[in-house]
Amino acid sequence: MSHAEPRAVEPESHLALVRRARRTDRALAQTYPDAHCELDFTTPLELLIATVLSAQTTDKRVNLTTPELFASYPDAAAYAGAERAELEDILRPTGFFRAKTQSVIGIGQALVDRFGGEVPARLEDLVTLPGVGRKTANVVLGNAFGIPGLTVDTHFGRLVRRLGWTDEEDPVKVEQAVGELVEKKEWTMLSHRLIFHGRRVCFSRRPACGACSIARWCPSAGIGETDPIKAEKLVKTG
Image (cartoon, rainbow, N blue to C red; front, side):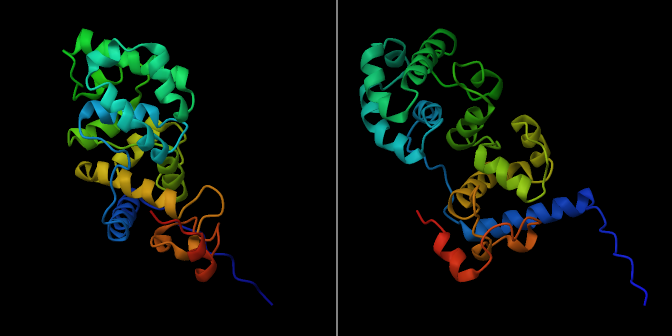
């Protein structure tokens, strides 16, 4: 009795990957039509500060802290001249408050000294500010200035690797790889959709695969809970 040789799996072409990535993004757009930045802000400065504060904590925690912060420090000059102890007291609930206080004061001083007190709308300028990397810069560009950017946070990185869009770990390389798959005008919204999905369905531990709207395009589908009823119970809302 002879056994047929297992059929070799053809590697995915770049064109096929692009098509799959864009189909996945369209499905996510249908799943999360209200996807948006979950940090509360009204100005580029408020978003910049809130994003810096969001490191190692939740957006909800930041949103509980920023009303008092923004009322007390309405502009860059106010941050530049802040009394450290008073600012630390406000930022304490966000964690790592001493380092964050240092960054916020430094941002205020840099904006006053180099940018006329205004938040610059160029990535090259934003990343020169204390505590601001490409992730924060892209959040500000995409959501405060309407300039497309990919926000490679932990959710984004985890999901694009699970989706097989890239196997890169370095955030800059991830940003470059994903940027080649999806149209530039979609970058900001793609970031929101992936982050929404990562927070609500595709968890780092035990993803809810059985309740996933993009499972058909995901090579990692099945690594989590596959039973639809059990998976639905894992899904987080809001």
